[in-house]
Image (cartoon, rainbow, N blue to C red; front, top):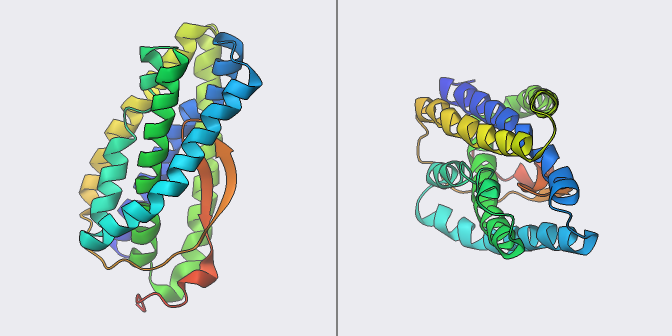
Length: 222
């Protein structure tokens, strides 16, 4: 695999660790610290997921006019401050606005990295490298969540502890941009990819995975 492909995978895995520092803890923060009702909680999840679904076609058109790499950069930079925005205010309408923005930007990030990911992977090694990536990504989710739990425990599991997680998550995402910059992403054509939803979360809209048979018509034959 090319240097570009390796750097891209390292970036995706490192960013996943940073996202998971805070990702699993939005729910207990809202229910325990903010005392939201379940209907209010579900409303926050729903608005992010619906916004993400509705914005995908917009981002796809932007990717066609620019490139998948450009879209990945837009999404990667955009998701940096999202976790820390939860520190600004606990007002429900503010959180609703944050979730709207979250759905919009996570759609750009995920579509961008799916497009770039399968472009930089040689077609004859996709299964092998996807297996490696899935393992590394799952490990990143575990490491990030455990790290977040440890930080929260050490900080007393109060509001300040949650705010610390949200701030560290945004800081880590910012640092990960250095890895993305070193990848030197080239402009690549946009291909069609079908995606299935594995789960829905506050803070990153949903957990998605590409449907591999939908890549049969991709142009990458390396």
